[in-house]
Image (cartoon, rainbow, N blue to C red):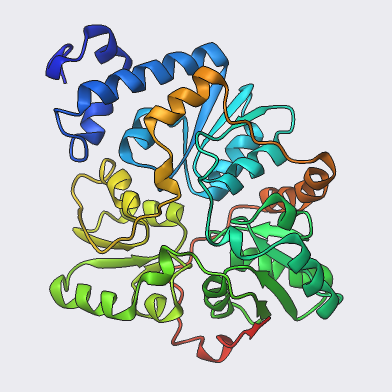
Length: 359
């Protein structure tokens, strides 16, 4: 886009160089001048505040491509938070992610643009619940999905993400010398991990409100309408969806699949903005629905990111004793080597491993 196009000033055009090409399929020319001004202002504020923005794959394209300094899945963002030299971290994601950033970087100021940006999965379990689980299953390691509060992480032995859950479960079983592991709180992630390992899984009945709404019929309909499309599913989906998909993995693994394999058509069974953000890096791929919106992720906007930096609001803090205990669990996860990306979660081949014990 040339300087001054669509009514954008030459200065703002320079500040936003390259962004328009990545968002033009999702932002209209009528909207662009206002968004461009916000992006330019945010990027200036970042320099003034010595701040970086950690943008999750579920952010809208204007946030993801316009102001995200580090983008990716929750595991990737957790690692970037730990490595960052910036004084201020702005979490363009949800609250548990901001807490994780604070746990790993207690000396930094961590901001979240909207305190209401929560997570149905994180809300499904408390630290008190984990203590009761430990009493019921003494001696077993607790592996906790990173989509949880700091209070829950503080009661945990090691955290995991959807990218490394199988790896972490097998590490914990070996480290503790047991053949069974507690994996909380996502029931579907636990069931899908169980299909990939001989380690027994004890699970909690927590679910992501985005991924639990997908059905096997959605996959069947996509197969019928788009028989040549590759279907990729997130491990927070029900197991019958992963059984029918061509590939299952974290948002980072899905992005890698698309950008490296370059399928002609692809269906992403996950949050809507995922496809919008990858599309900029995969111009030869046609992205096909379905998708579901996460109402919590969508609370984060350019406007409230700007306000967060302008007024240094809203700061996320974690009590020191909670952070110290949670840090061990998160750091253990971060210190593990990168997991190998599975070709798929094959629910048919591993059917005898699928059974899990629900708490």
